[in-house]
Image (cartoon, rainbow, N blue to C red; front, side, top):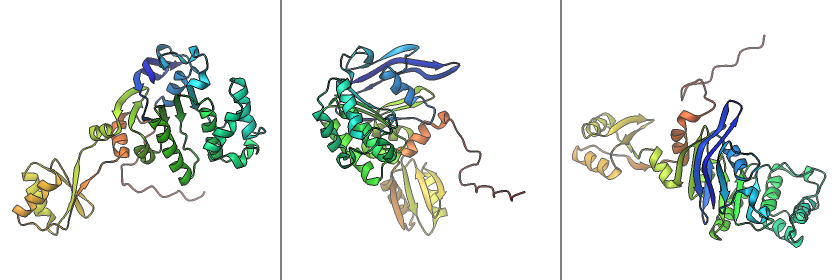
Length: 313
């Protein structure tokens, strides 16, 4: 289990993490989400003692990381896949990690097989693709067979097969009772991977809890309906208290379930060509939940065409 209580970290006048508290429980995959500059990487560094907090504390299995007697056996981390020396082979990189932490060298070949790098184990890391370096970083995180895994963007650089593999692999590790804490900007992938979420913005907690609860909290249920007489249907829906707006060739209805929309249309003799519940996505919820915490904003309203490029002088 990972626990953060009142974590605060400043860099000069910038507050990177602001009185942040959350719990990452074992047995599930917990996704760590936030816009760029929200403090995710700093928070992870605070958890594993690479940065010192100005206030608060973080613990793993009830103890600060610096007090763990065998940290690699307790916590596996992947914060930067490029840290391995480029002239060293993947296998020798892991052998160095094992020997320096009192681990059996035989474990190196086990984790290389787990992440699919056996065939390139003797190749220099400098010749690895980004996806291969990610796999090597994950192998290093698994080297001590830890009960807790803390991974920053582990799917970065992986191809579709690799992304699916890491999703299934992390879910497998969680089912073993491990604590799995993983950050990612791949929201579609996170929606398939994470059971719980910790969402932050500008270093502050926005949400902690189940992934489904986050979506329901920050989005509104809607119904998509199409009719050859949309004006009459819209008037009837609005008279019944629903919110209606055009959405392409259909109407988007909020405040009324699909069954009620169909029954209302029947009572008013309005023909329907389409009636469906619109399922909100994790991306929808994330954009709504972090709307006031985005570091970068575009200057054009949604749907506006980009200005044409200026001709060369």
